[in-house]
Image (cartoon, rainbow, N blue to C red; front, side):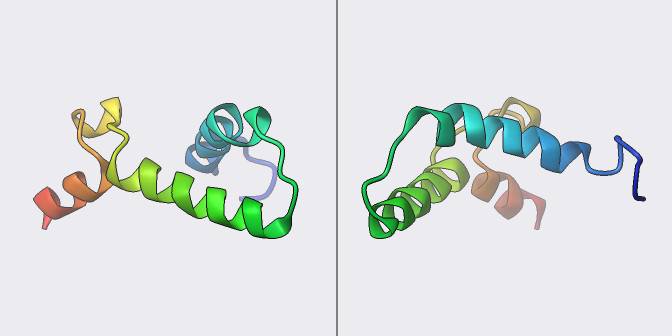
Length: 67
């Protein structure tokens, strides 16, 4: 709902993690470099980085166990 700060809390939390771990620590010389490093970060985030809220599993592991 527009104007409700709790409606998108998950997205806001994800943006905070993204900015802290990726965006605020890098500078990119080209759009191609940004695209490559962003894809690499998303792969790392989903396949390698463990998440405490997911029982210390990666998002992919958590999804596969939930099926």
